[in-house]
Image (cartoon, rainbow, N blue to C red; front, side, top):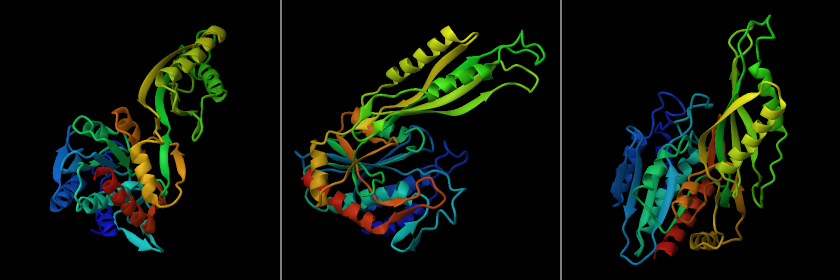
Length: 369
């Protein structure tokens, strides 16, 4: 089993997430490939496809019994390819790096976990090895959510890229819409109109002045920003509404309910102090932050197999680790080095790809035997 060759085959398969790019190829083709690969390597294979055309593949190698089970998790979807500089589906090797869409985020990690699972299960293991190649992480994480309705494990490793560092925490996020109400009127009749866009400006200033105080030792504080704004009908009419979409990144210890309370307090204050200010707050998608237990067996086992003092890190972005943790599965994130996630060029460092494969292989053996 050669991780580099497997990665090249995975890169050549278009698996653009259609929720991000309308008409994207989705995960069916790459799921078919993974299914055949696992079958050739004597894994029991399950295809989960609650959303038609958006399959995840879960491969299982049963242990002899009495041992701990370990899940390896990685997503097989990618972001779009239209802005890629070169052929995104033609892997190229140069200066110890492989280039192509998904090499870094995160088909490199998927190839490493597949090969590691294959190699590790050549040894007699008491615990089950579960490899989850999941759909839709780049948008809604429906793949891991579906996997967790059918499978569990005593621990998990998510193989998102981590530059060979041990990632034990990451931020969460929650989205909100704020609809500021105005009153439509002809531009020549200010006494009849209420400018919703101008009123929204008061909220944007308050948003910019928010003081976020909850601090995490690796992640610092959370953040908040206005992502989208729309409003108005035409140049000569007072706008009747203005809609702002915002994102609040959260750190461990913060919840969506707490964030909603913060924003409600701001809006209530503006309603009380700004004439004719009216607004409605609507919560959208929310994902919790993640923090691993540094003393969990899976964390200690992986660190022991690094063979050198680990660099402990946290990520500002969200990953499926949070879903695994919420399901009661102790987990951490460990993956390859490289660069270019979601960028015009993307690459994985091939030495790191080999290193991750080796560390995962030994970690599986030690944890499951």
